[in-house]
Picture 1 (cartoon, rainbow, N blue to C red):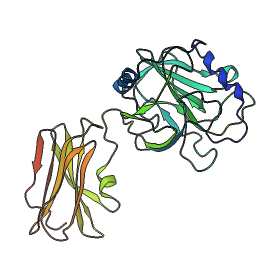
Picture 2: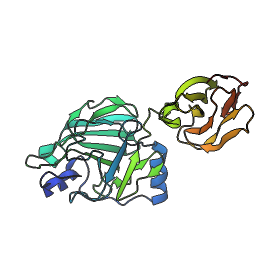
Picture 3: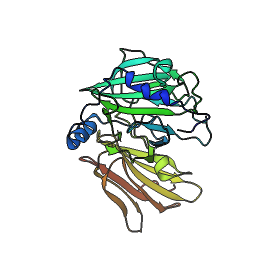
Picture 4: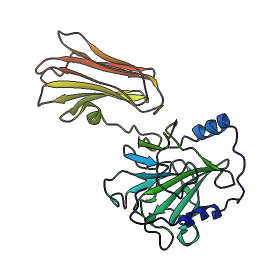
Length: 303
């Protein structure tokens, strides 16, 4: 975290949050990682946002806790949205500052002994006992803490399994990948579990606009875009299923009279971009996702 003052060491009292004072033995590492991956935790921020996590900036940290920031000043992130890393039931939604230094805290129970903690929130958007879905807003980034603790705005995030603080703190996993302790910048794929975090214009770049598209069953959509400034076409196939998993996906673009260009492979979110200059020239375009394929005729001859 970034400090605007001194963080009181009394935050070590975090153990009082319903956990035993004696650390329990960690489960076998392979089993632990398998269970974390099975819950499909995502970054606790909206889809597409990039945040930098730090596990060693605070003297109060016991293990794998992470403080998240993305702004370039002490309180730049104040009020930014925080979302649930996975679906579950809200176990705590309260101001815990005078007890342990967490300030406004949301704890979500994910079942099988797993829970996530979202601390120092400015505001809380959920209530104890409420069911939440992955990606649902649970609060906003803040700087609440124990009276006398002058901290800058950040999100303190933890994953715990079972009892026995701090031995029950587990390594954080986001989108199937273990966080790169002690520091890493991570882009959120917390997209509600069904929405591709990318758009055709984002993949193709500034200046491109969608001029045509074709559904690839329920598995995805292939898009044709055009940039009037440079006369280029662009094709991208966006997946709708198996998001985050590398599955066979392709996109191609063929300018009449020229060789076809193709991007094909096992991709997590999209194939492409495939670009070619085609001002006033017909193009053939298409792609594949899952078992569905689309192949156009030569068309869009004026754009």
